[in-house]
Length: 506
Image (cartoon, rainbow, N blue to C red):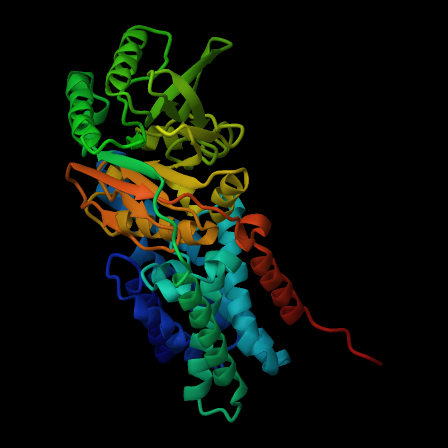
């Protein structure tokens, strides 16, 4: 590895990181990998693996540095130790980018004509692996950098966010081929044709007629400080804040009010004192307003002298009674549970104070919200981290949800780029499934996203907010909703065909 190739790999990592919310220069993604691709020319497979690792390490250090802040401030871990923990996470994630360089060098040496199309396929394969392996962490997939470029991301209703990633890497590869002085015109011409087709499809979908909104949703952002959220001394104040903001929201006569994840600072429907009293008080408040409420709350179930904790969402009807409950399916590792706690990672809970021991939910829940005219709207809810998993959200819509709500508590992120990165992923979920999304966050960003990815209203961070918007439920399931990651698995197949050597004919 030369200093030049190392500098080019670092530059690619920096450019790619800068294309994501935080810095937010999305146009950089379209040529961010070009320096790295230059560095790969003439490199050995081993050197390419190391250069890919460098790109990944720089990229993730630039996009998930907020983890150190969360672990330090809320996990009460000393800053040096929190920084080391974050660095280790970045190293692990960089291992999902390292093979990209090695695969390209291998393909270029054995089948140079396939490099152009193989590069985006390999990239998508590695993103799909990062989404699904070891609980999954599909944060900052390349396609998310374009969440505000609506003509580009419309193709997600066919191929998911991975399809957007594919096009980005395809264009990067074509640019590098063109600048390198090769005489092959097929790569740039093919990339141009694909990009034109994607943009053409995007503008076509953006010109689709949109029916008028039918369900009026109000979002309440309480902006409750994380240190006060579970302090019994502030319990009444927290509840009073949400009631005050909800009364303001009710002035707009919504069909549904949405509170964030764990907005209720007690175990709703808990059987131990004082939970029955607090639960009854909230039911009376909802009944007095005559408007359904969706709220997040921790819950527990007593079993074999143990309390099984869950992160849950409750839909309360106009009468204040529970109409539906959803228990979070995909839990946050090291936040809501410790993987391999009984064996390998027994020491983690002693290092980080707030690590919970939650139980995952068993299935998807479709919540029916009855409108004043008698019509019912099928609504699906995901909690916090779940919105970053395309297949999980897709399955919920495939079960019948025509409106999505996502409730979250992003106070952990502090004043970093993470709240904006988290919000950007909800935009792709809306486009993939052609359903509107209402997002309620404790400290922001709360907001609405329509089925085309427009963001008509969004709050700031660390401020109280009440937002109301009329949403148009989805009317037709997309190809992606019905069939999932078909495109991505075709990329996996393409990658295997490109990297596995063909048997030589004798």
